[in-house]
Length: 596
Ligand SMILES: Nc1ncnc2c1ncn2[C@@H]1O[C@H](COP(=O)(O)OP(=O)(O)OP(=O)(O)O)[C@@H](O)[C@H]1O
Image (tube, rainbow, N blue to C red; front, side, top):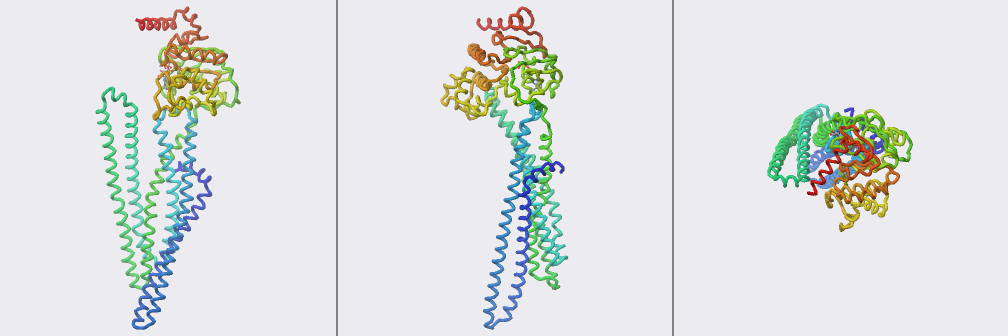
């Protein structure tokens, strides 16, 4: 329960909704109790009037009595209807304040959670799967909303109504009140247990459904693989098994729900029978009137719904507490990467690694060992090495996606943790190894890193990335949609759009993480030439596998198993006759064999 305390700040924020809400609940319940008393009174009046009417049998006064009698009845009827209309009005106002407040809180919470998620570092996203992140921001928030809205509203409502009704009942007759209320606690307990069971079962159904939809989503995304490996039948069978589990769970829920209403009706029926039986004896004794029985029966009917709600509300609160605990678990995670205190600086692009060691926190894989090098501002530096040698890790460390274990990375003399993170990252153009394009137009994908942009700037960036002509060949040109409902770009086109996205920022430092792999050598050369012009006097770091891509670099760093094994220019490294020369010779051999 303590987890729900987190919500108090929202209640405080919306106090001017919840306070009137409570007042409306009280008023609406007063208008629920008064009609029962009026009906009881009218009931007694009817019995008395009928007696008087029969007394005047044969006299012409009987007509006048009949007239008075029907007018009184009409008056009571109108009164009851007016009272119920007023109750309806206040019920409407109660919902308008409390349920609306719950929607505001839901909105605030979703925004807070989303904002917090964005601040968390890459490690967090690796540790938690997307489905879980989404579930906490949607389903869990929804369960908490059921607490801040309906649960609170019904709790106050049940409390106020029960208080008013029980007081009125005891005012009429204590003995009858006790008999009448006797089955109700049993009803609360049963409803609580049945509801918990229903929630547990529907939770499981929810899980099954989300497993089923993830399964279907993944299989549809991989439909090409399924078809090429002729696994349609196998996939259909797996779907059937999962679908069957969902069906079984749903059937079991239906059984429990089917028991719910009959049990409830049985207990209410018992309460009514007890009231009539005990009340009947009291009427014969003369301690209450027949009208009181009518009044009590209305009370029972009115109490039924709130009492049913009590069991429901208890399970709602339990579920909300569990959901809030899950939400809090993420909200209390502090970002691993904290921005530095240094005010914004304009980078010149001097990067220095001093004895840097780095181990991935989740896997314990030591990716970099004692890395030392310096990139002077304006240099073009290439990083090469076998797969898994730590090249992307190096790029990630420069982007400060992770912090180093020990050693220092200095940029323009500042260590990375000193720098203002957004200001720093904003000045770097990063093209990751795995291209990611949003389901949006090509133009918006290129302009992604900027708040405002001109068409010209987008065209220039596309030209520099040598993708302009490809885009112009599409019917909608730069407005062409990418992603699920749009077109699919080729691997090389995707890489070039991703490069254009980095170039449009006119970054001070540019990092290309093996993003020319799907581009043919002629286009690659063109891009590199454009880059030479754009990045003149700015720092460029290029991670590549092909020596042809990097041979003109000012410095080439050769990595192997997380260590720098060689560094120098192309010619210097060839002279060394070491690892770089081996790579060079291997690639020459490959090219020659390709020719034949
Ligand atoms: N996010 C991660 N979490 C844990 N370990 C990782 C992560 N990313 C990479 N590694 C590990 O770190 C090591 C270096 O990987 P890295 O991606 O830096 O290599 P690379 O040289 O870029 O390889 P490639 O040329 O294949 O892209 C590998 O052993 C890899 O398994």
